[in-house]
Image (cartoon, rainbow, N blue to C red; front, top):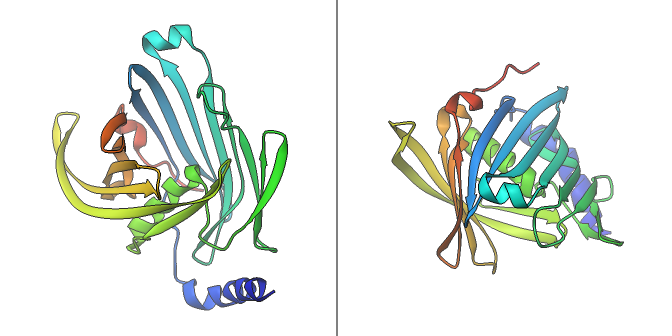
Length: 242
């Protein structure tokens, strides 16, 4: 009862605390080349505004190269969310994955009026408590871009998925000069890591593009596991918002 009261109080106070918090991330489409071991793939990430302050973010990943001849499939992720008085509030998140060895297919419904999320995974459902700020692994990337561009630099994100509710700590590590398309660029380096997992993902982001990552590196226990790189910088040009 006390927790639900505090949650409602936070929503009531939000218009007074964050009414001047604008949305900073314009619609975009970005395509990345992915490398994980010997496997090669392509990931397409898209954010679009549907109407008002409702948005959709989607991701498609497909295998390419030699491995793609032997194994077909796709990882598709979808999340729709509202941006309300400085808060990112997801409505639903779903993932369909027929590439990974692990069963990662999941659907999450967020119920903000009661402060809980319902997770449908395999043949069962479960619920976890949530509060404003809780997202999912897909939406977390957009939330990080919004946080960086607004100058808040959120220290951690809780996400809800097939493993329940998990926390990712975020580290903001300063600027790096790296070569992108043969040109030296000053990019912001930041990373996130899941508590007790040994997995750290490091991003190099372009401040002028609302901190859209141009490159990423995934490590587990300090060993390289995978890389992402923007295929063509022109693909990531922001699209005009409605």
